[in-house]
Image (tube, rainbow, N blue to C red):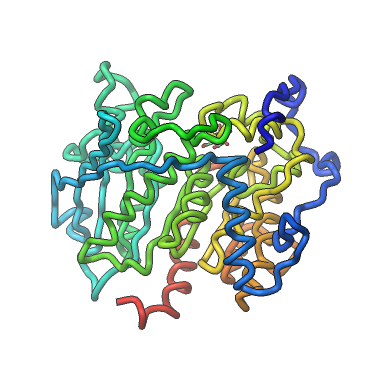
Length: 416
Ligand code: GTR
């Protein structure tokens, strides 16, 4: 589909110029999330679920993230370590190795798990990739290096320093609020560089015929989250109706895509996901399709390149990705100094997804006004903008758990 357009060269100017001026945002028309490709307008949940949702999902497969090939990967999980008195006795910690095999090859990925010891019944679970390896989350020597880092030859490499991302993962706080956390280094699933494909889980599956719509890293990362979920739902401590997926930045993009495909994620959280995530592409504010496809040619499927510098030609936009989470809970967060991710574009996108929530009688984002800093909106769709840089902070976590508490309260009867 549209393969002929893929050869359009990326204009050099579009690669370099970054617009941070609201008055220079081009005039654009957002595609109506409820209008089908044949022009008919969706007015019921049934029409959304039977017609428009599959049509949109297919658009994101073919035009942005690529199709997940059909084929079988064997997945096995092995408990390597357990400490029942982790985090000052408040949590049980597990390290679980996943082995993916297919196509005569195998890939290993290491989960790090924290479960609150004080629990009545099953607990809600956050699933989220870390960027710098499990060892970056806490200082403890028994935390094994994630397989991606185990392969590093130079043991003095600064990336092997422990605890260097602890501020993004307030583990004791998460546990104190009654949530379990399952994390893994995203690089274990697809090493984040343009030559990462052959070492990634994509090498375990057959290649799809059409090279233009072939999945790459974002598709693989989303797929990997679902394999984590496969394990989580079998654990005796986990409430399988209370799975939350949370991702920051490029992992925010992957989290949204995972949530669009896998309805087991009851709450989907995008932290500063920006271009190719929550932010509207057509605004061309901050990072653009040209910049992102040029800097990260291994993230999206090749069809997405055809919109570089041609965002006006996009027949869809990211609010329609967010709409695919409906009627489940969705939360989008921005940071005040993160213009690169286009905070306003993230907000307007959450707003643009809201008509689908309305079909279900649910309140999404109903205002056109972006809230002030630290004034979270917590309807069925949530949004906040906090002060500071592109990052994940304790404030973000606090909002996410407040939102999840609210989401799961109404479900607690059906949840055990
Ligand atoms: C940037 C990229 C963003 C975002 C970010 C991150 O370099 O341009 O789209 O994904 O990386 O993941 O931190």
